[in-house]
Image (cartoon, rainbow, N blue to C red; front, side, top):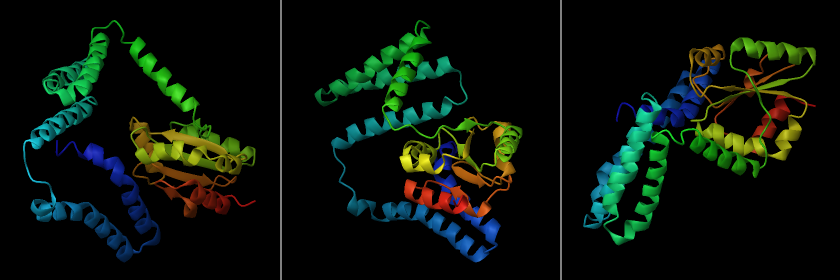
Length: 280
């Protein structure tokens, strides 16, 4: 779990780490860049040192209530393990593991009255998983979930209408087309597992002012969720470690490197950058 936890921590640390590394590579200021990396290390390590030093004085005393905490966190750790394994094992094997986790451990918790509602709900979820595992509803259940998600997204303010590009060649073709139309280009690197990307999608990119500011801009998006060889080559083309990253290009197909956005920005800061990159 310690080794595989890097798969979880990676997307969270990527944004500040990429920002520090890009600053060092573009400015050559090794002192400030090194200080930024050192501060990042302190930010990740200091809380662990504080908890290890003062845990005995600050944390609640042990007691019978810890048995419930132990059980809940134990189930949580097993869920994390299944989530990580789902990337490398077959879908039906993943369903079987979720089925066992959703029924057997929670069934034990139902012996206590306070956990019965949560346990009963989870067992219903386990039954749905079994229906999918047995093959009767392997198509219907995902379709039902997708319909629910689409319905929720439809009730939200629509995000930007990105045109997808999957390779460097696709992007170059779109860049040439934009040049013929004398339009600037914005390229967004996105991944489903990137929390900052999702926050940009549902927060910054839904702002009506952002839509208006980019009304005459070709907006492209590179979805690197699967992290394929083509995705890696696409990121490497622009010296990027991973998403989120937003790049701006002039109508002459030249990247405006000084206006790159790495990590999450709110609508106000995003509009300031767009105004500088594409002045009226």
